[in-house]
Image (cartoon, rainbow over all chains, first blue to last red; front, side, top):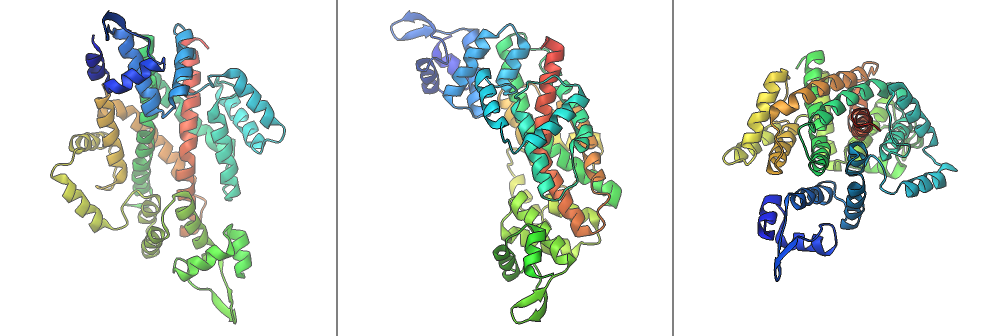
Length: 216
Length: 216
C-alpha cells in the first residue's frame, strides 16, 4: 500500500508517519519511484503498535523506540514481548537493577515492599523482581497506614485473587490475534483502556452493593 | 481538645483548619477564652472527611462544602451518604438531570450509554441514572471500537462480575466503623487509594498469567 493508505488504515496522519520513518521507529518501505514507496502489513501492525505506545501509554518517541527494538528481538517470545509492551518489566534490565540497588540502602518503601513480597508469595504469582507495580502497592500501603487505616498485605489478598481472575479474562482477549505485533498492540490497548472501565465498574458495583446493604 | 491537638491528631496544619473554619466547612468550637476554643470528636471526624475530600478526591473547597452539607442532611441514610462522598451520585440532582437532558439531543455517547444500560440490566445492579461512571464506560467502548477492537457490553460482563465481588470486599471494610462520618471518610479513602493498587495487582497478575501460558 502507499503511504496515504497506510495513514488511512492505521489512523495516523501522513506527517506523523514520515516523522516515525525519519526517527527509525518504522522501517522504510519498498521504493517504487522517486519519493514513493510501498508499505506492507508489517508496517501497518508496527504503526498500530507505535500509536498505542505513544498515544495510549503516553510514552515519548525515544522510549517507544527502545521498546520496539526490544520487541523486535523478542518477537518469538510472547511472554517477554507482552511484558515489555505493557510495562510490566523495565526495558533496560540492568538499569532497573542498578536503580533498585541504589535505593535499597534506605528505601522508605522497604517495609511496604517486603509486604508486597509476602502477598506475592501467597498468590504464587511469577513476576519480575523490579516490576514497577510492586512499588505502587508498597506506596499505597504506606500512605493508607499514615492516614490511620488498619490495612496490610492480608487486606489485599482477596483483592489480588480477583485481580488474578481479571488477568485471565485479559489474556483470553488476545487468543485470536495471529501476529505477535498485533497481539502486543491489542494487549496494550486493552490493558490501558480498560483501566478506567474497571474502576468505573467498581464504583457502580459499590453503589449497588451499598443499596443492597443499607437500603437504596 | 485545643486546635493544636486537632491539628496533630487530624494531620492537618493549624492554618488550614482556620481556613476551613472561616469557610464554614468546619463548625466553630466551644469558646473557652478569648481566641481559644475547644473541639470535640465530631470536629476530628469531620476534619478527616474534609481532608479526604480535598486531599484525596482532589475536590475544590467549594465542592467539598456542598458535599459536606448534603452529608449532614443524610447522616442517617448510609447509602445516600456513601454515594455522595464517593461521587457515585451528583450532589445537585436537578443539575445532573438538566445536563443529561441538554445532552440527550445529540449525545455522541448515546449508543455507548445504551450498551451500558444493557450491561447494567444483566448485572441487576441498582445505580443512579446519571452516575458519572456510566459515561466513562460508554466513552471507552466508543474509543476501543474506533481503534478497531471488537468489543461490546458482552466483553465487559465477566469483568463486571469480578467488579461486583470487589465491591463486596470494599463494603466489608466499612463494617467496623461506628460513626457515619468515620464510615464516609473510610469509604472515600479506600475507594480512591485502592484504585492504583487494584490496577497494579492486575498488571502483576497479567505478567504471571502470561508466564503461565507462554512460558516465563
